Length: 128
Length: 283
Picture (cartoon, each protein chain N blue to C red):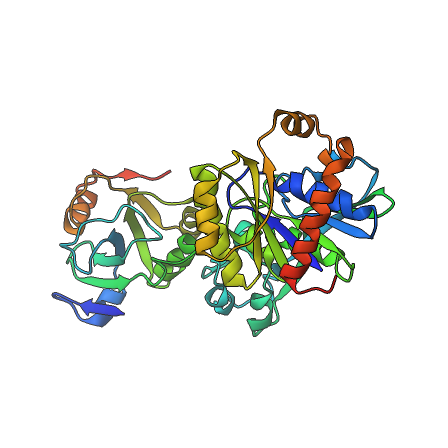
C-alpha cells in the first residue's frame, strides 16, 4: 500500500530529489515518530525541502524475524538518502552503512514533521 | 517406538526421567537415548563413555559477485531477511539464514552456490551393552539449534526404541524434538510454575498431534491442582515420583536412581509400558 501525495512538484521531479525516511506510527507527517525501525507501522518518505511525502506501509511490522534487513531493503528500493528513527538493530544498520544512507536518532516523542524540522535545523544526532 | 521427554518448565526432571527410563529398558532391550537439549546437553554425565564426534553442518549461500547482476530476486524470496541486495553488492547475514536453499533456486543467473558451515557437534557413544547415547552440542554463537536436533534424531532413525530428551520451553527446539514422536512424557512438579508451563507444553504436544502423558516429579503427595488439570484435560498420570531427600541426593551426585536403588526399575518399566500404550505400540 503506497500513498503518494506531492504538494508542489511533479512525480518526475520528486524522483530526482534526496529523500528522508522517518519511521512513523501513522501514514502522515502528523503521525508520531515510531522509535523502532523494523517494526514501525509506516515509513514516511519526505522531501526535506518541499515536505512532499509518500507513506509506505511496512509489511514486515508483525514479522517473525529478520524484519530489520527486510525493512531496510524496502527503504533502499525507494532511493532514500537519510533515515531518521529511534533505534536500529545491527543488521539494518549494516545495510544502511553499506548503502551509504545517513542515519539519525530521534527520541523527542514528537511528530514526523517535528523530526524533519530538527533534521533541517541540524540538531539530530547521527548514529554511529 | 520414538518417545520424547519434555516439560515446559526447566528443572522438572526431564533428563532424570529419560536417563532412568533408558537405563531400565536397556537391561532387556536395545535403547537409543538422544539428548536433544543441544544448548546444554547433560545426559553424558549420567553415562560417561568415550564418544565418536562429528561436525554438524548447514548449507549457506555464497554469491559469485561476477555472475550476480543484483536483480534482487534472492532477497525478495528470503523470508528471514538474510540477504539484502544493494545496487553494487549483496549483503548476507548468516545468523538469519535458515538454510532453506531458496535463494540458490530462484537466482536467474545461477550466481549462488551453497557451502557447508559448521554449527555444532554430534557425539555417539555406547555406555552400556544395550544403550546407545547420541548427543548434540550447538557451537557457541550459532543461533539455530533445530538443525542439530534434526541431525541427532536422524542418526537414531530406524533404531527400534528411541528416547528423545527435550530442551525445556515450548519454542522451535521443543517442536523439533516432539515432531514425529509416537508419544511424549511431560514431566512436571507440583508447583504453580510447574503447572503453568505444563499447560503450555500440553498445548504444543496437542497441536503436533503427539499423545502426551504426565509424570509428576518431586510430588508433595497431594498434587491437587495438577491432578485437577489432568482430569480436566483427559491426561493420564503415568507415574509420580515423590519429593525425597534421598532421590535428590542421588540425582545431585550425577548418579542414576535405578542403578543405586534397583527397586525403582519396576516403576520405570511400568512407565515404559504406559508410554507404549499411549503410542499405540504392541507390548
